[in-house]
Length: 163
Length: 69
Image 1 (cartoon, each protein chain N blue to C red):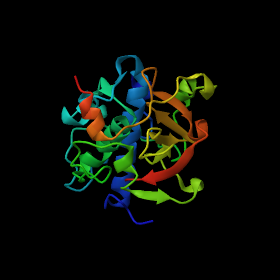
Image 2: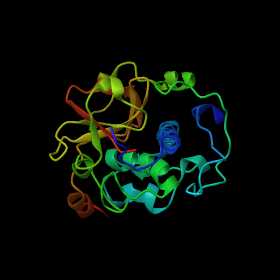
Image 3: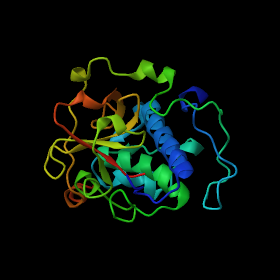
Image 4: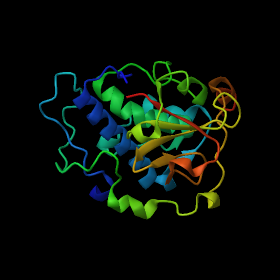
């Protein structure tokens, strides 16, 4: 599979590390991370918050959280918005499934890939970021983020790769 | 709280000039296998996913902006 991000293999590894670090940062700070679908959901990127500096957003939703995690890795190398195609200023599951590449076989899932659930362009769309070991970190409600098995939902649709 | 940073995260000082965040701190060099999570994180694994609140549906950006206060 050709690289979506255009990064070299060593830089992809580093980008995945940074994306997963961001996901775990959100998980660790779950009580301070609030679920919203308002414009505040994008503050992780708009405020330039980087997990490696110990920074994390206080507001996000599923797609904003997954995008922020990926941005931590991709912006590190100045990669354009290959996740939503919105110059890192917007996005949702509907744009995320229009970007990246689908991972055909689950045995090939890598850290930093994203698991999509439900109807991505309907009202049931959901996305979570893969962190290894067949697990995802999902931020789908105020109670999250949660560390869960990839198939924690029965309406799993696909894995997409952006790094 | 160092423990929650995956131990495989490290900074390659000899990266090309593309690396814009050169002051990313070095971390442990013992990379875990790619398909693994930090052992400490296992404590956070939800044992029964059916008991967590259902995920909110993701709406398009325009509808989201409409709800912005």
